[in-house]
Length: 98
Image 1 (cartoon, rainbow, N blue to C red):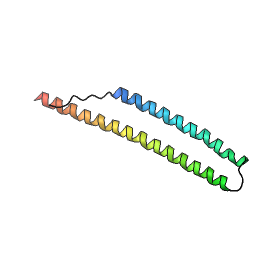
Image 2: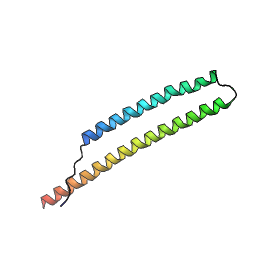
Image 3: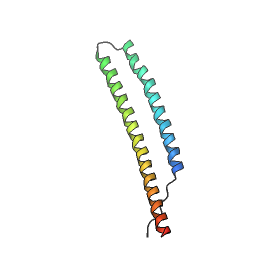
Image 4: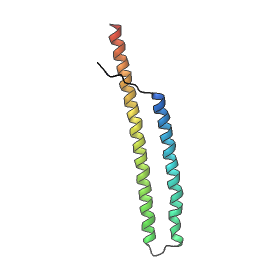
């Protein structure tokens, strides 16, 4: 006997929208933090401050790319679930038609 499986596409889309908003919020925080990090030039002299700033910028880019990959993976999973559900519904319809 097959297990009863449920999937609420509406809730999945709501979660996707929330995730997008959270990612945008994180990106905005990183953008604001970048300005604070760049301000070290005012009080940190000697050249190493540029390495610090570059390190932050590289980390910021990595975090943003990681968040985008994570969201893309979620969206791909939802599409795959939708395709599987459609295939199962079509198979059930064919079975009931015979």
